[in-house]
Length: 312
Image (tube, rainbow, N blue to C red):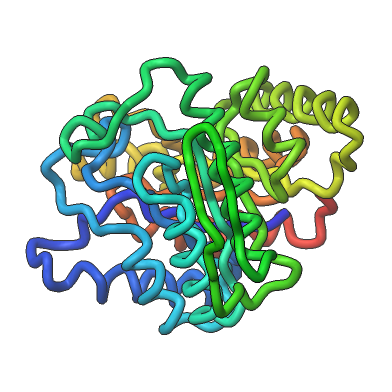
């Protein structure tokens, strides 16, 4: 089982000028402490399950390109980019550039989008039907993959167009950067994963994750796809302490309130991660509530060693 860190909060201190230095320090710490993945959210305002909408929030692909230049071995990603926020042909160019800057460490995270308030604030059209957004996502993926492969790309889709478009240089990874599609929709999203993706990302308790993987496997069988070619990942927000007393004190200090996180001791978190491992998770991506540094420190020192060498 592998482990990653997801940066969902940009609250690092009172000075916004220090935000990038803080996230750079976090990414470098991650790659030097056994983590294989570092991702950021592709939003422009904070989402309700993490914090307040007026919290500081950095633009994902700008930050990712900077992290690509200062890290050396950890895999980098957005978790995940919404189809609506950038023209997909331009997005293909941006992703290829980050892959080159990182010398082949980009995982291209992509999704159908969901945060309607964000769309409204920034003037993006928000299709009400999830099925429409998923069809847009799949069409955009096909255009992006073509741009990464073909000398010139002409694409006439229902939602997106490109005309004899050049993308040079191509991404460094061959045949292309891995594509991760996030979401657990059983009828459409997981079917798109089976058709096109190299990795999936789902959330939820272990039994729910196990079920989603079973549905994905069924879609793979119907599409003639090898299920084992798709990396199975999960994302979860943690708050970890050594004792119940320390955990409760931390919750009060960080004003956790009703945020949907897993709060537990080291032993409780170890048991939970074991359940995810048994459900089939190969890469567990963790965010720390309110950027609590002890949570990831305990994960690295006390929990991850239990899973070294465990087959996934």
